[in-house]
Amino acid sequence: MGELSEFSFSVRAFLRAYRWWRIDPVPWAPLEKPLAECRLALVSSAGFVLRDQQPFDESVRGGDVSFRRIPKDVDVSDLVDTHPSGAFDHTGLSRDPNVAFPLDRVRELAESGRVGSLARTHLSFMGSITAPGRLVRDTAPEVASSLVHDSVDVALLVPV
Image (cartoon, rainbow, N blue to C red; front, side, top):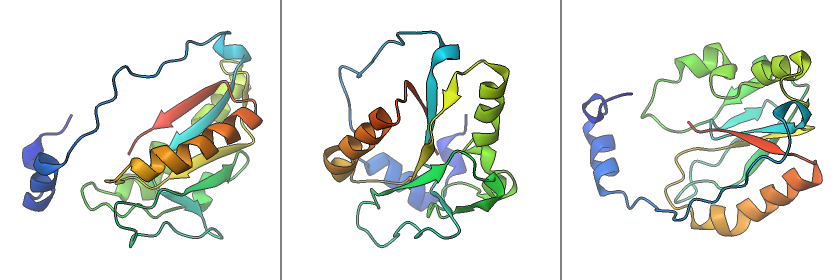
């Protein structure tokens, strides 16, 4: 884990002043069947888009709360990093998108039988959403409905 001192002054100041949301109780849904029988979807805040998709809009105050659907059969080398944060080094994301969108790894899990199957589409969000109210109110219900429609049992959340 990194130290706060590793960040720039402006990032440290932002983190100290940010009003963090506290969610209590934490929502939890127990797994009702073995993972080997479950359909899994990736949900990442790495800000990846496909080359033909609209990039996330950095000008939206509080953060762009939209999401992009990423087909399960996409080549991860076709993912484009559009995450606006300068608070971390993007080199790893560029070299191997699996670092933050581990699609190749979950394919391996499905092929080996450790996971039952993969969702038809996975979801990519832009991180650095500093005003999550719209995300919770507007985007989350749409995403939940989409996952239910695709019979997803497990969502692997990959925060960036």
